[in-house]
Image 1 (tube, rainbow, N blue to C red):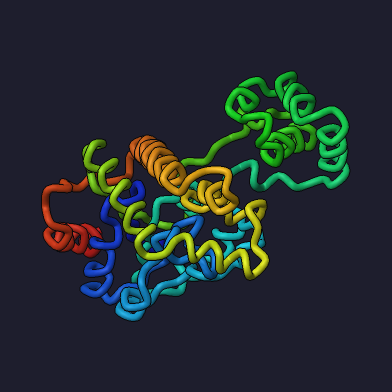
Image 2 (cartoon, rainbow, N blue to C red; image 1 turned 120 degrees about the vertical axis):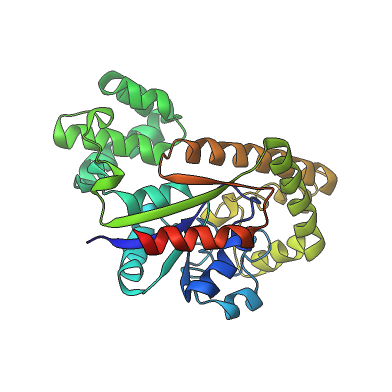
Length: 303
């Protein structure tokens, strides 16, 4: 029998914490962070990380596990998350990183394809000498579908797609894709069905609140620790947009407006991603989160 896992998912500022905390308390469950930014240490405000009080009220996992100067991949996340899902009596995934959920739901076929440092080195050298466009054109010749999906500046994924093709002889777009039902877990997934205009307003409010809480000071402290705008963690929303203001190349008002715009766009993309997942039960956002808890518990216990 597959292990049962509850997931509270959806876009940023959609109310995941307000639902997951009381649910976890009632089920005596433990929360696994499913957020690609909350894994980073010393980045609390800009990632809307659960407060110390919230983390004390319910055990949380996979928060503050990576240095801001290091990269962190989907495969690294799943390698850490799966043992926890297996060990915890009532695991509750909470977050909006759809790729993490996908990695836990199914073993991506191309993820099983090995690597070849010689192939990677060949294309990295091509990128350095001829530009990223040259590498992307190589991919267009062997896998036009994947090339259309990936921007030429997404060099890591472009090279991986070429690597998969050279190792298997089959384009990445034609690799067999397992169904989520093939995975080791039985997911019970829930998200709030929140109107776009409400979601956008909540995104804007969240950005304003982050600024009031001291997001600028948080970034300055990270800079003192040696974190620069080129490090992976600083590519996150709310961080990369403030560097020009800190350097005097833009005003803080301009930076905040840009953060709000990009956060709204990001939330829209998240909603589009999760709408494709037929397993998700969409909850009426007009109803208080506490009212949905009994329904979720019934679903979880009756299966």
